[in-house]
Image (tube, rainbow, N blue to C red):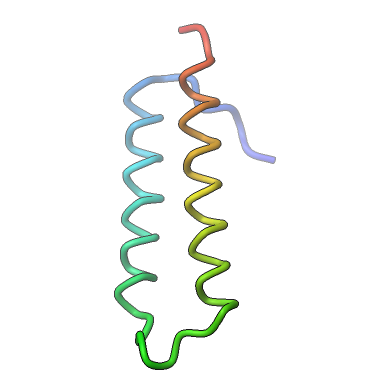
Amino acid sequence: MGKDIIDKDTQVTFLKQRLNMFMDLLEAIEPEEADVEDIDRLLEIIDEIESKVREFNNRDI
């Protein structure tokens, strides 16, 4: 695994990048063609981002 992100600015940058990737994926999905797997993957990404936010909030800096 990668190194821990402990710097607040780096944490914010990481979260912004993840959110931008999520938005790009969301925009790329055609609503008429989206299936359950697509929605599940979007939900997984949201869960991962939420988990990182909790992890970053719990770190002592």
